[in-house]
Image (cartoon, rainbow, N blue to C red):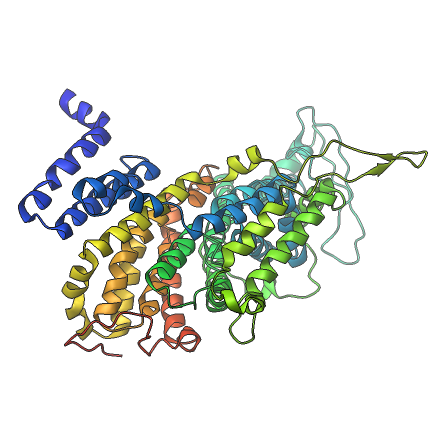
Length: 608
């Protein structure tokens, strides 16, 4: 038993040592550049999937393995670790840092929730929309971490209000009705230890009754017993209430975790998998300039909206039941839960006060960055990049992100203020964000991980491993195209549940690109759905950081997340398949094999 305990303790160390040794016969026996590159790829992929080493550390392995195998020179490998993607990431993180520092995210989230109202179903949708919107521009992890404390506060007040209502219902006589609740009132108000008289004004169910008084006296034991007899059994009632409260917490938590992931699909900068895809695609197919912020937004916004709405319906039905009649009933009086929610949200919003100067500047720069992204090269009209015809293709989305990002380090965070005698008071110059604040938000691990992925992709090209893979995958051309896409989506969706999203997409992009070329299909036909499905890590708490953050609040079990996540996964894959076969086709003319993709002769033809 001691041996097994030692193996368990040192399992990561053993994995790190044994993986390269067990795979070593591959380059020693075959002795080709393809085999040596495949050896490096396998070692890095296993370390990424198992996380035996930190992801960034594993990503550095090609930097010394490729030069030692004679695949690429050291300076060539090093150049792959910093590309246009990293400049775009730096600009986006500057914006995210300012949004987090000045609490602009909280204002956006609360305002969106206030707009949809406090009905439980609509409140849930409000949190989902606000979290999804934030995750379009921030990391999914940041969006979930920002919104979750607000959701927790609202859910706590809902439970407190409903528990108070239940306690008062149990202690009042048959003719009594629920009180107008105060959020900070004790749950057992009508049954205090000294049985003092308590009086409350109540809103009656009978419209003719204006108010009534609930008075409980110590001597009136018989009346109390009669009331308790008319109530359901205590155990059954308590279990029902606990189930109801538990359902509220579960659905609120899950809606944040899933909407943070779903919202990230919408923009190129919304999640690291989208950025990795864009950089890989533009590097492998430099002649194609069709993937940019605007084109991705157009193809993905319908996908995001449909998945978000269907997820809302699924979670609502799974945990709370979906009551269309109550949801859409106009003029309905607010329940205790709705009153509690509204009060908490309004109080939280009031605490923020009026919009501050840094928030206004952040909002302006955010809008400016978005507009510049959309208008650089929209496709249907000339964009601002056409103002520089001699330098076509020089300016990319990273150019815009860097220009706006640098402004956050220049624009002062405080303005001049006037004293009572009318004189201006100057503060010390401090920009909107500092370098230390930027560093604390910058995901350096992702930056190095992506660089390692680019280095692997370059090595596969130089060693001809990608051509060998393409040749072996050619027989798949006999399958129907929709089946090839579905298989790709299901594989990456399964792998991403146990591996990080960036690692999954980094492993599969160099495989799927040659697959598309081998079966003579537009690479976007396979790469776009695979990229989107890589984000569908909904099943497990460890599948992505947003899930882990929500799970850490203690309201969910693993089975809760598996049960809900399985439905979201099915919804996501189905919507992506629908999209790639319908509205995405004309955007990129997917049924035509493009001139910018290599023309690999193949005897097999793909069934469309």
